[in-house]
Image (cartoon, rainbow, N blue to C red):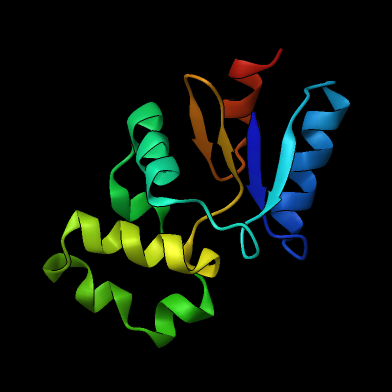
Length: 116
């Protein structure tokens, strides 16, 4: 299981601690240094059932600087995935990618359903 995170993100720190406290084994990837590939992002979408816009870190500075909100409706899904795969700071985090599931963001109630 992969956990894409940003080390300075307090939510990511909480999420990783939560997994360790539950004795869940995982491999960590810094979302900026090892940005998820287009294929990994497609798996996240498939496994999570989320729309692609939910993968964007809408509260991030880069999202606002690039005016992505205004561009979202005119971009194709392929263009969105390519943009995300090129800059981890645009991706909502943390992302957990398992063999048959994906979680985006840290909501303890959702995570608790997976690991009791």
